[in-house]
Amino acid sequence: MNNPFKSHQPLEKGKMKLIRKFINGWLQDPLVYCNSCGIPYFPSDRDCCDNPQIGNNLQHCWAIIIQNKARQKTRDNEYGSNKDNTLRIGASLPEKLIRDLEQYFHENHKQKLWNNQKEFRLFLKSFPQFAICERI
Image 1 (cartoon, rainbow, N blue to C red):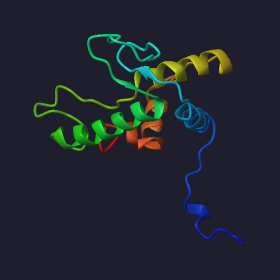
Image 2 (cartoon, rainbow, N blue to C red; image 1 turned 60 degrees about the vertical axis):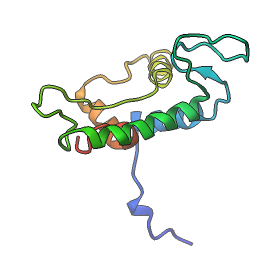
Image 3 (spheres, helix red, strand yellow; image 1 turned 90 degrees about the vertical axis):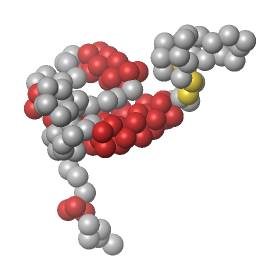
Image 4 (cartoon, helix red, strand yellow; image 1 turned 45 degrees about the horizontal axis):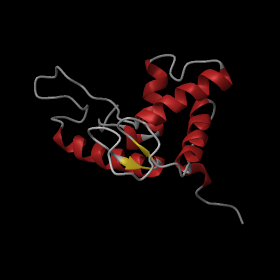
């Protein structure tokens, strides 16, 4: 049976397809670590740092997405600016995700994650859960 909504599914190709595939695999990693200092977590008497944020990739990513939704509401306009338009926050991703993505593209594809602003904007449109601004 043909899917009547096939034409409505996003057509991703090139770098965005690679990024989505990487993120989907990255979210499956069960390693528990501290998001603040990046050290793998092992239950002990003392904390690994001053601000321990313990969880796996999926938990840290979900926390960022919830935080991004809350931050969207605090922005004064749909572009993510403050009242006097001096500060614009575009995106927020887990630190480990951005480091791992950069390393993946450097080692496997011999290129930078984002070569220009156009690629970064395309990333935000493809992954709106990481965008602070409603309009890009």
